[in-house]
Image (cartoon, rainbow, N blue to C red; front, side, top):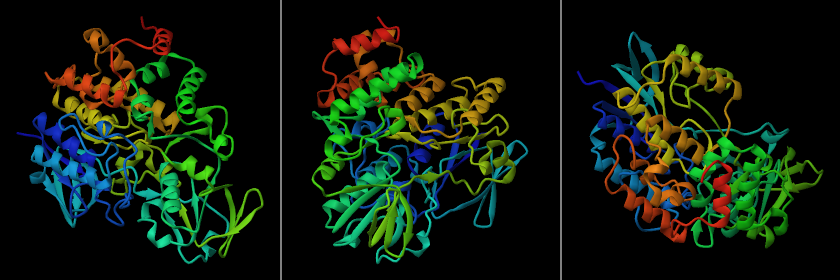
Length: 491
């Protein structure tokens, strides 16, 4: 009898998980609380943090799955473009017929060897469950003295509720945070007619443009070499190399009139944005230290300065929220203590038949690592690769509990899942692609070169994608690339 799998969520994670579960002979049912598929990319108020004018920070090559490349159109797709893509992907694999929209999952609990999924007063039993409900639905707002007293006419919202600059026309706006959503919103407000825009931040991050010399930055920043360097070199040297990419691309923030960041890129952090630093240099965006207190419309900053605002937008991150998981499921995961104790964000040995998709926080686009995680889950359950042994899983869970939830980078996540799924390409098998596989983009096609579900056209596709925008135009490494490669043991 074919095993039934409940997939919770019809965003990119739920769709790609269902596609690969089907390939291994499972029968997925996709539960979606909203009226349509797409997850965050539906841009529906209250269900999504994507606003109408938003574009991706990942290039179209890395904002796609391996079966359906985006071969033309905007280099950085709009939210509408991504939603259209997800509908095409669902049609490609007939996922629409497995979709149960307007069906909110209220509970997930264990029952013998299976799982009970509760929704709308009904309960169904499944052999397995994949939780793909999204990592970015519970925005966090830090404690700020007096914040509840804020009296500006535009009020206080989070980036999750932001829907465009029009409601802030000719208003004074404070944007709190320095990650992607905060800087994107600040620059949109500055262009969209706000009277004044100020960013308040705890620390100054480095800022990496989306495009440098015509090449998307994610093609250079998130590479296989970067993963090998992270595993081989001292952290200080990895820090230096990543900072070298960023500073050569955009300079350092203090050159634009922003505060000077910490010398260490790891200590300061980095955010991708094309025009933020230019707006700071032009005086369109002001920068203040963190806000200390609020009294009516007046905000006091940590340097003692006081300024009045009409609105505040918090872009200060998200908490992991999985309220439908039953107590005996939450306990092994350590969820109620703020943890997520799992083997590589995916499995727990005490919860067989349960898997998670997309529950980590990272820099860079999610589509490539999501597909690789989906393949690992489907292959492990379907027998295409061996399930990790109990002892190894418990060791991985112990490490997860010790380190806690930390932000990672797209390339580290992607290679982790590729290895687990048995699809990390072997350099020795593709000498003509060595440079692209090391220093080119981690395009989804490179993970169809080897292992289960390898594709005959993958080498040609990957060569073309690595060469796109002039990034990797030959197999001869530059002097710097040769030096870097030799440092991690390459020849």
